[in-house]
Structure formats: structure tokens, C-alpha cells
Length: 467
Image 1 (cartoon, rainbow, N blue to C red):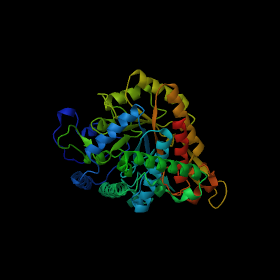
Image 2: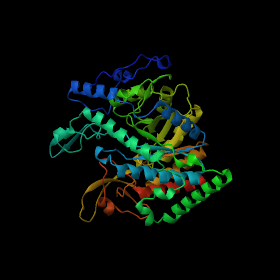
Image 3: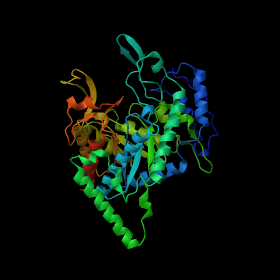
Image 4: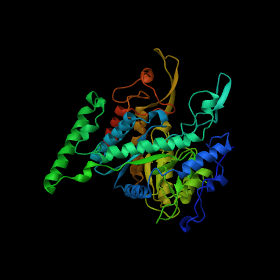
């Protein structure tokens, strides 16, 4: 049973008079850890509730406005980052690499699609992951499952696997550090479109796609200089870009502790991130996650997959956005390359028939996870999770085509990726094989596209947008 603590609440606002941040406690809550010490949990949550927010309500409103434009085809959403962040990876080089690859991908998509790109990072809070089983057994020993650094540690010991409340406070601190560094980079000119060559990662020197990427950066630089010649002044707004954060709102006490009202505005705001999403396992009408999310003013992502029926999806939309607010709902579909053609069309039909306003985006990662056994080499016999680049690309391609045939719009993509030279997904331009996976396999949970594969994916999508 989940031990929870009282997080101070202010009086309900008439805008949402039937809801408070702790309303979820009256519902069935899944994917929640069991904390052994109730008083320690209460102390940690009280500390977390007293800390400053990580984001602001006006940043959230800006994102909502941009998502509303994407819903009518005027913007494209790029959401990407780690499967699950770790405390150890809160380092300047790691953060800068993730920012670089998302900037590069957005540059490619903007150039190819001819429209602004909304940049949303899966970082500064993506410290928890849902798990299939509550416990894990090794050699006859059973311990709680590792649920991400927000909850416990990966080492297979009783102390490490015990849920530790103060890790929520530590996660807030690392999220703040990450956000501060990202904002400093962006405001300091790191994202200056006059110099996209500064975003180059080392792979550009040897990637099979280097010539196409460099051609794009040259054309963008030439276009900016032409605009400035006509205007007779620098295009200052091109020296920085907007960047937003996202994470799965999985651990509900953590989300509740950072949910509050703000002066001169109605309602409640989850100020732990700009765009929280409900995972596929927890998007159940009437259960705790949907109850919590229905009360916050943030735009909301909702993962949908093979088990999502049209009736369930429409029920979710009615609960989460009863007033049909523009920019409120991002539906992130994740079916797998072999199931999308069967499952997605009926959901698109249902949403269109109900005249619901949503932004459709494609997550081609989670439905394409395989377990392979390394056949040869020093790691022969090792089992490891991976994803095939061709399957990821195939799901994206099918998603574009299904939405086109239905008169709908695929307005975004959602990737698990990193700016590092990892070897976790097979395929891509340089044809990584199963035997090459263990060269630099670092993810603790799910496999990610590396920087070269991520940029190649962006180039493929840009061709589709431009075509």
C-alpha cells in the first residue's frame, strides 16, 4: 500500500471547484512505490512543497498556445530525450549533448517542413519509469523493482531497492540544475541560428549524412543573411529559441507537491514541468493518474496504444478536456510498426467523429522493443533490449500516411534518444548489428537512438514533411 503525506493545499478556485491536488488519493493508484516510513515520506513531501517551482505558469501558457497552432498544422512538435534520466548524468557535457541533438533535429525539421518546431525535452524531471512487475527475483532473492532514480537505486540490494522519499527532493534539485544550465545556454546564444555549425557533434565529421546536414546549415545561414540585408538590421529573435520540458507524471505525490495556484490566474498548475504526460499503463478513466491530470492547467500528453479502444479514448478526452480548450491535449500513439495500421485508424475516426481537438504525435519507440541474445563475441549469450531503426522509421512513415488518408494531421514525433555515442538501437546509416550493441550500451531501462541515428531520423522525417 502506498503511504502518502499531507501536502498543503490552498482553497479551491471556482475555475475547478470540484478538484484539489490530493483528489487522486480517493482513486486506485497504480505504479506507485511502497514507502516503508510514513513520517519520513511526509517530511520529504513537505520540503518539496516548500521549494520554488521548476517552471512558470506563463511558460506553460506559451507552450499551450504553440500546441494549439500545431493542432491546425502551423507548427510541428519534437519531443525527445532519455528513456529515464539518472542522477549521475546531471553533468554539463551530457546536458549540452542532449540540447545539441534536439537543436540539430529541430533545425532539420524546420528546414524540411517549412514551419516552426516546438522543442520539448524529455529531461529535467524524467527520473521515474513504470515497470511491469513490482518485484524482481535473482538467484532466489526477491526485491522491489528499480523504478528510476526518483524512487530507488538500480543496485540489487535491499538498501538500494527500498523506496527512499528524499530522492524526490534530490530529483527536484537536479531538475533545477538541468533547467538552469539549459536556460543559460539558450539565453547565451548557444542556439543562435546564425551559427548552426556550433551545434555540430563529433559524428558530423564521419556521418554518411554529413553533406546533407552541412548543406542545410549553409542554406539557413544564407537565408538569414538575406533577410537581414532586406531589413537592414540583425534578426535578433533568431539568436535564441524556446525550449520546454516534459516528463511522465508517474509518481503522484511528487507531482502533487509541486502543484499550486499562482497570483492573478485561475486554477491549479503542475509547476514541476511544462508538459507532463500520462503513460500508457496509467491512462485509465476513473483511476488516480487521470483524476490528478484532469485538474491541472498544463497541456497534457496521453500515451495511447494497442489496448486503447475508441470508447476509452473518448472517455479520457471528455475527462481531461471537457471544455475543448485549444492546445490542451497531445495524443502520443505508440503501437509498433506491425500493429499501427490495424489500431490507429479507428482511433483517428473516433476523435474526428466526436470533433475533438487534439495534437496527434507518434512515439515509434515503445512498440518496437525487442529482446535479443548476442550470438558471438565476448558478450555471446547476453540478452539485451534493443530497437531496430528500420522498424522505428516504418512506424513513423505509416503514421504520416494513415493521418493523411484520414484527413488528419500528424503534428509531432516523440523519441527516446541521447546526444551520446551509445549503441542501443540497431541499424541506421552505418548498420549497427546485434553483435555491436554491447560496445556502448548504457541505458538502465530502454534503448535509445544515438546522436547519428537521431539526426538521420530527423532528415527522413524532414523529407516527408517537405514532400
